[in-house]
Image 1: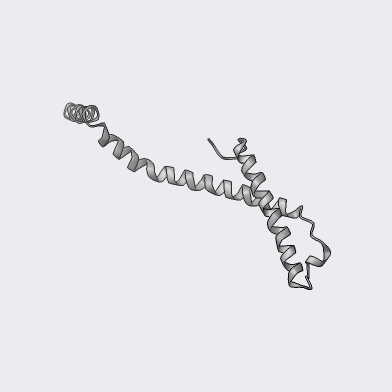
Image 2: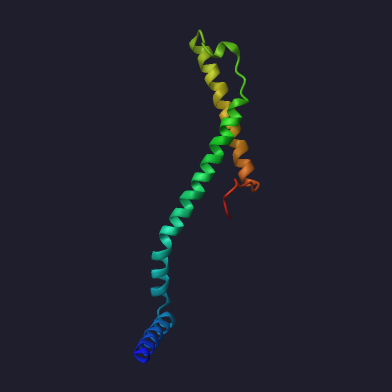
Length: 113
Protein backbone atom coordinates (compact mmCIF):
# COMPACT_ATOMS: atom_id res chain seq x y z
CA UNK A 1 0.00 0.00 0.00
CA UNK A 2 2.84 2.38 0.86
CA UNK A 3 4.56 1.58 -2.39
CA UNK A 4 1.45 2.45 -4.43
CA UNK A 5 1.01 5.74 -2.54
CA UNK A 6 4.69 6.60 -3.05
CA UNK A 7 4.56 5.93 -6.80
CA UNK A 8 1.30 7.89 -7.10
CA UNK A 9 2.89 10.88 -5.39
CA UNK A 10 5.98 10.57 -7.58
CA UNK A 11 3.91 10.43 -10.78
CA UNK A 12 1.76 13.42 -9.76
CA UNK A 13 4.82 15.46 -8.77
CA UNK A 14 6.54 14.53 -12.06
CA UNK A 15 3.54 15.79 -14.05
CA UNK A 16 3.44 18.95 -11.90
CA UNK A 17 7.13 19.63 -12.53
CA UNK A 18 6.80 19.02 -16.27
CA UNK A 19 3.74 21.31 -16.39
CA UNK A 20 5.57 24.02 -14.42
CA UNK A 21 8.55 23.83 -16.78
CA UNK A 22 6.60 23.82 -20.02
CA UNK A 23 3.61 26.04 -19.10
CA UNK A 24 4.51 28.36 -16.18
CA UNK A 25 1.50 30.53 -17.07
CA UNK A 26 -0.82 27.83 -15.69
CA UNK A 27 0.99 27.86 -12.36
CA UNK A 28 1.05 31.68 -12.33
CA UNK A 29 -2.68 31.81 -13.08
CA UNK A 30 -3.51 29.44 -10.22
CA UNK A 31 -1.17 31.37 -7.92
CA UNK A 32 -2.86 34.65 -8.88
CA UNK A 33 -6.31 33.18 -8.23
CA UNK A 34 -5.23 32.04 -4.78
CA UNK A 35 -3.38 35.28 -4.00
CA UNK A 36 -6.12 37.72 -5.19
CA UNK A 37 -8.28 37.66 -2.02
CA UNK A 38 -5.20 38.10 0.16
CA UNK A 39 -4.00 41.07 -1.90
CA UNK A 40 -7.47 42.61 -1.82
CA UNK A 41 -7.67 42.25 1.97
CA UNK A 42 -4.23 43.82 2.43
CA UNK A 43 -5.11 46.70 0.08
CA UNK A 44 -8.38 47.38 1.92
CA UNK A 45 -6.57 47.28 5.26
CA UNK A 46 -3.92 49.69 4.01
CA UNK A 47 -6.57 52.05 2.57
CA UNK A 48 -8.43 52.04 5.88
CA UNK A 49 -5.25 52.88 7.80
CA UNK A 50 -4.44 55.73 5.38
CA UNK A 51 -8.00 57.10 5.52
CA UNK A 52 -8.09 56.93 9.31
CA UNK A 53 -4.72 58.69 9.54
CA UNK A 54 -5.86 61.42 7.15
CA UNK A 55 -9.15 61.94 8.99
CA UNK A 56 -7.30 62.20 12.30
CA UNK A 57 -4.82 64.70 10.89
CA UNK A 58 -7.65 66.68 9.25
CA UNK A 59 -9.56 66.84 12.55
CA UNK A 60 -6.49 68.10 14.39
CA UNK A 61 -5.81 70.61 11.61
CA UNK A 62 -9.35 71.96 11.61
CA UNK A 63 -9.18 72.48 15.39
CA UNK A 64 -6.41 75.01 14.72
CA UNK A 65 -8.78 77.17 12.66
CA UNK A 66 -9.79 80.33 14.49
CA UNK A 67 -12.71 82.01 12.81
CA UNK A 68 -13.87 85.52 13.72
CA UNK A 69 -16.70 85.66 16.26
CA UNK A 70 -19.26 86.85 13.74
CA UNK A 71 -18.78 83.70 11.63
CA UNK A 72 -20.83 81.59 14.01
CA UNK A 73 -24.00 83.48 13.03
CA UNK A 74 -23.22 85.61 9.98
CA UNK A 75 -25.65 88.48 9.52
CA UNK A 76 -25.14 88.93 5.80
CA UNK A 77 -24.73 86.60 2.87
CA UNK A 78 -21.38 88.20 2.03
CA UNK A 79 -20.06 87.47 5.52
CA UNK A 80 -21.28 83.88 5.24
CA UNK A 81 -19.41 83.52 1.93
CA UNK A 82 -16.27 85.03 3.51
CA UNK A 83 -16.45 82.58 6.44
CA UNK A 84 -16.98 79.63 4.10
CA UNK A 85 -14.03 80.85 2.03
CA UNK A 86 -11.83 80.95 5.15
CA UNK A 87 -12.77 77.36 5.98
CA UNK A 88 -12.16 76.20 2.39
CA UNK A 89 -8.75 77.90 2.27
CA UNK A 90 -7.83 76.26 5.57
CA UNK A 91 -8.90 72.86 4.16
CA UNK A 92 -6.88 73.44 0.96
CA UNK A 93 -3.79 74.27 3.02
CA UNK A 94 -4.30 71.00 4.89
CA UNK A 95 -4.50 69.06 1.61
CA UNK A 96 -1.29 70.68 0.39
CA UNK A 97 0.50 69.92 3.66
CA UNK A 98 -0.82 66.35 3.64
CA UNK A 99 0.36 65.69 0.09
CA UNK A 100 3.78 67.16 0.89
CA UNK A 101 4.04 65.04 4.01
CA UNK A 102 3.16 61.86 2.10
CA UNK A 103 5.42 62.79 -0.82
CA UNK A 104 8.33 63.19 1.60
CA UNK A 105 7.93 59.58 2.74
CA UNK A 106 5.68 59.76 5.79
CA UNK A 107 3.59 56.66 6.43
CA UNK A 108 1.08 55.98 9.18
CA UNK A 109 1.81 53.26 11.70
CA UNK A 110 0.81 49.82 10.47
CA UNK A 111 1.43 50.42 6.76
CA UNK A 112 4.10 48.41 5.03
CA UNK A 113 5.73 49.59 1.83
